[in-house]
Amino acid sequence: MRLKDKVSIITGAAKGIGKETALIFGEEGSNVIVTDIDLDGASETASLMHDKGYNATPMQLDLSKLDNIKEFVKRVLSEFSRIDILINNAGLFSNVPILEMTENEWDKVMNVNLKGTFFLSKEILPIMIQKKYGKIVNISSLAAKRGGVTSGINYASSKAGVISVTKCLAKFSAPFGINVNAVVPSFCDTPMFRGLPPEKQDSAIKSIPLGRIARPDELGKAILFLASDDASYITGEILDVNGGVLMD
Ligand SMILES: NC(=O)c1ccc[n+]([C@@H]2O[C@H](COP(=O)([O-])OP(=O)(O)OC[C@H]3O[C@@H](n4cnc5c(N)ncnc54)[C@H](O)[C@@H]3O)[C@@H](O)[C@H]2O)c1
Image 1 (cartoon, rainbow, N blue to C red):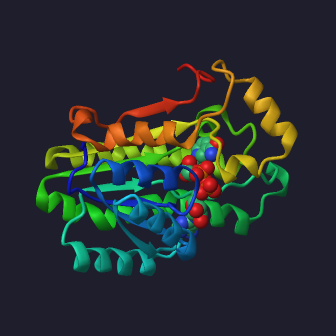
Image 2: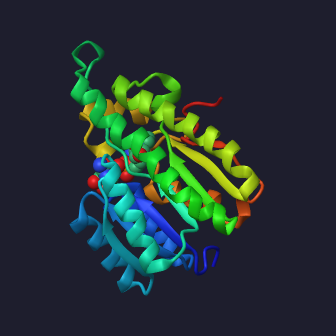
């Protein structure tokens, strides 16, 4: 078991990549805090984990609200007294065209994907620094590198920001024994991808050298690697898990 007794937080774990990652972490012996804005969904993930004998605690968190982030971290600390691993997975998609972008649509996506990722990390870092141990894995997107083909400028820019946040936090945290990395999916079989119009799904699939989109567990396994001590000498890495669609 690669995460035995580690306390992990996985955001956006009600469905998709976050849910699958929670199941993988549970199997690896982690005590998983399954969090999402959607508490019912997070509770469903946790009960699926309980059925398999894994340790899981569902908690609600709206990442776009800083007060909520602070209260959430206090609650986790009061129940678990440490946090070893943070997976910043939650994300909001948008594909509003550039000339139709509104301030509200821009802020909505930025507040979850970029601001939420940074401020939750900032709240948890002092706890990891004190223990001289921590792993943070952020989830970016191919959109950040390719200028958003299926996605909007707000989504692509937020995910480019996630890459920058990853590198800044990796440099800052390295002296304290904390690794910060990012995973960059292209297209993965989740409700987010299945929400795209069918013609966009088809053209995305056709563009992938491996000939198919990723299963959520294929992202979960890459996240597990970076969150485990197998990746102890890797920090500031931006790991493509993209079926070969972009080789940079
Ligand atoms: N699926 C893909 O093809 C793909 C591609 C590239 C990047 N990604 C990224 O991977 C991550 C997971 O994506 P997914 O496909 O599983 O998405 P999904 O839409 O299936 O799940 C995202 C989860 O985030 C939660 N969430 C949304 N707003 C939130 C908020 N304010 N606070 C807390 N939780 C919130 C949702 O409730 C949902 O459960 C996201 O960051 C996404 O941008 C996905």
